[in-house]
Image (cartoon, rainbow, N blue to C red; front, side, top):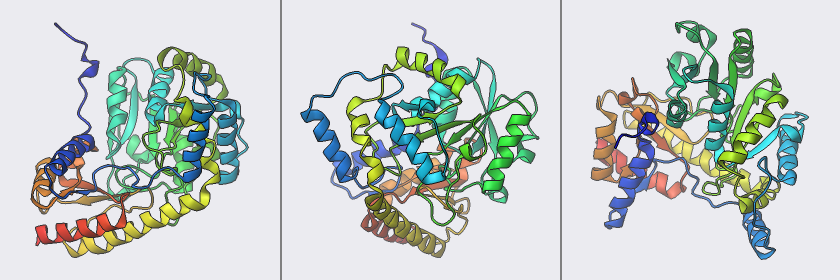
Length: 380
């Protein structure tokens, strides 16, 4: 029997590595997990308590498709606290993780066969979700000369019509960031060309120097995607949010009603407590910062000295072209021979990713320290 081609997307290699690493661990072997962007810490204690309270009070049922009003107000207040932006809660849409936000954005903004620009390297789910709704993902090769970020000059080199640009700052897998001026320039560029601007801001709050600036600081006619998974350490709770222009709220609400009904109710009530956990969350960032320093210091000593500037998020994107021309095979050998699990760059860049690997430093510091030592011995 023939099936639709929409399911014929590339595998998410980070998850494939995780599966292989878990299988190795189940056989009694040591694994140093540096393959996925999942914080080693749990959700903050007040979030856990809020979830228990919601269960005890039997508040678990459907919610409005746009999310519970108290959470939408709390998210709007967060933009005032973090960026000084006065945001109408009516423009906030609570989603089942950021992935749902991307799907709803693509469905509501683009028609089949329209074209959206994505930086390469970049998060692989972008192009896979776009492809599944028959929108063309146009890869934009970005390298060290632009800090692995897009620029108007690079986009101008693309032939044919373009309908949108998706940016991430900080980015996955590089951790690089756009400066405020660069971000503003890209937004103005898109507006001038009648292109939709989508800003992936799920790593906001996880920066090591320069603070991230929201695209909302420069325009209301942008789409913001964010999540409770990274900064708030709530992976698995499947909760995110979107900020959209007022005229897009209705279409996205109707899509959400039919496709998802609502985001997980218990997660929504638990997340109300997340914005009061800044002290605990800052402690998590101190741990990531320590892990980052270890990798940036030790990797060059092993010959891995071509690294993206990890200004934010919790990843190191390392050039390994002097060691291999096949990052997939290289990561498989690394896992099997020294127990270090890393993601091949092909996950993020189908054209040049064979020369790169991504190492996550979201785990516990002892895992990073022991993983570095295992990697040092393996490369010696």
